Image (cartoon, rainbow, N blue to C red):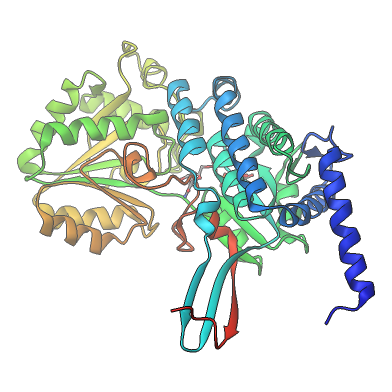
Length: 465
Ligand code: NAD
């Protein structure tokens, strides 16, 4: 039982909390950016404690405010992102941010579960983990921060972001906008923070910081491996190489349109985008013809395809990063081909061992591989996915084929008869996530991913029926 001293202390704490909320926090001018990781963590920790002392209604207001701020600043941030990173397409960035602002789950994702029976009542609640260290990629600097920010705060956490240094300006502006939205809705300053100059060194400090309880890495395999070795609870959302398999039963024209749209969104930088097409020989010619007929896909001759490959794949069989996320016009101009603005993708027939089949190209250059039949297609698609367990796409009307492929490839996202982005909720059912945790298995992350479970048991005598 609490002593009278403890009761008084608790009352004083609540009164101070309430007064400071009514007055606005003293640190109202704080922007969310700091000079050191230690300061970021301290601020986030303090703010997180304040957040958990607030009502869930207040938390909902904070989330609503973050969503609105992301929408209000969409045009400016999308333009900045393109300018700074030189990746992707403006209109697609706009879509990315709308998707993240509107389809990232909020507190509804952490509803408690209750079980009542002869032995009493069991309540399961999803509790915050505390402060999360979130490492974000260059490819989706705005989307990932909106998506992580909403999900992590909805779960009651503070966040210290370490954005990719080459997307520093965009990411830190995004963080400041969301930070201001939190404060405007009566939330605590410092709940989401970042150092002004994120580097690999600050990432290391975050990973090793004793007051950070969870790490979330969205990026390539190296950073996922680093957080998994940290000894902390870590969520790893890594690279993919999503195959799109088309069999002889597919609606070929629709398949062609979906693949062109999915592979060209944001110039292919989405980790979920189709990275190679595998098509059953019988329908390969039709598929290629229908892709061309979309008016958005340019078919490279074998000679042109070789020139593009020499350009975008370095001698060490690595992607030449200069061309990642660039418009197809810019890439093809380098080999003397001028394309109209309507084009979004270049396609070419490739042998099975072509480097662009195996590398995560993240540019609008799409290899198409013929296979004898669907069984060979499934086997090959599993190989090229390389155990990433990320995303696969299939165009087919044969349920047995679709089931066989889904079972064999074991990816986190499996899209049937749609563009890849339907799998992240863009024109497909379900919530969105820009942190898709294949390696660690949480799948499309959401608020619940960023919690720890707590059970509260009341023994006997609670049933009212
Ligand atoms: P990246 O791995 O280079 O960087 C991601 C983040 O990790 C950055 O903040 C970076 O600074 C940090 N980082 C990188 N190496 C690190 C290290 N050794 N120690 C500590 N921090 C480190 O990735 P990128 O180029 O920014 O993004 C593209 C990659 O991310 C692609 O492979 C793409 O598939 C993947 N991605 C995956 C998802 C997903 O949800 N699974 C989403 C977006 C991007």
